[in-house]
Image (tube, rainbow, N blue to C red):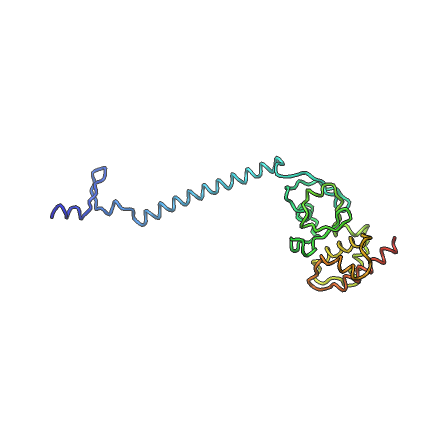
Length: 225
């Protein structure tokens, strides 16, 4: 009986000879939470160190020019030397590096036409085109249409015919219109213009005025020629 009772107490003898009830050998709730807290803090320090090391390595690679391609973009008559990643989109490069924000980012999938500009005289969706593909090309954005303080005939016509409402798509509409008027393969009738402009969406529905503006600009450009 005494033997059984002694074991029921679960006495524990420490290395220094001190005896205590068996419960002192167990991990208390408080000690457990403290140990977990220390472990989590340690993981946080390791994670922060790893993030800092990765950021430092990325900065070093960028500084050496290991992640970019040096190209020259001729935009609105001015040559710009830029370094871009291989997957850099022309639209983002123009807006973020050259700060030409007139070209708008709409759907980013080539479906709305808000990002349209001219490359070597041909209208292009800038959101679908890689910047590295246009090294040395002649690029015209909405900022480059006006010359010597005078609006382009298309800009004047859009103003005169109220061919816009919210204005978000207007830059792309104008650039596509200029491309159409420069392309002699496209017939001059309204139906042909609507078909050629079909890649540019106007959510405000100003299509009738847009066509009228384009035809007006056509007449002014012929007269100027």
